Image (cartoon, rainbow, N blue to C red; front, side):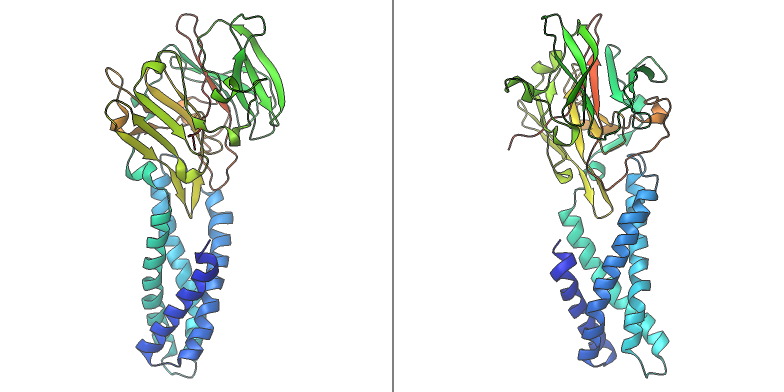
Length: 375
């Protein structure tokens, strides 16, 4: 964090020189006060704004952009309040110290805040909102043959959600306690379909349903390791697996490790490219557990407690193309997790959630996992 180390000192120097020049004050006094003032406001404001306030807010995909701008305003006001005493001390001995210090605070902090905001804007990932359109989940329905299995962040049990059911139904008692736990599928040892499994604590595998006669999309990494290896949620990134007929789609999707890497997609026929992510000073949402469905939708997990997270249309024909850049949230209000509150995505942590999606045309089941971008 360059801004938190060297950057604060540089901003303090600029603010000090600006105030000294505008109000004809001693440069040394202003510099000695404004440099520590910047460190003070950054650390106190950062602790309050990021370590406490942001975590308390009901931030979700649907309201995240509004909260972003509200927090921009809050942090600006906090900067004025926290640095004003230091600036007021620059005017000690002046009869008009109060009015002058308020004026100096507004001028110097507005100027520096614009610079700092621009710096963070360039370094942040905001394309989740600036290049995508958040719509109700009903506008991007799951195909009727798709079933989604996921671990509830509230009770740690496994639930099933279909497009026809209003609420998710609990299927298995799992009592998962770790946010890195997730679901995955593996080939049945008898060659009889697929087994739905839970990965607990990054190593313990528990059988949930054996021998499902389904079309499944196993973890790409498990196909190149012997014996197959399965990673916990936070390390489950990379190339997005394609389920069934999705293998014929011209779209190729990747999920990056860092929040700012987000999700990228490229159409090999048209060369069209899409990228979106969310990482700002006020929080970040990592993307994990991605899978491209036969209907050319991408289902993935965003953040910690989003189930199963936004889905995006990919491809052509009757399905809505990815170029339409639409996202929808699947949370408690949409019937995912009948017993948990609409918790939303809480920044800034990284250990995402867990989930698996299964597709079911007549007797087909599909499950969703995360993936990662090569390189």
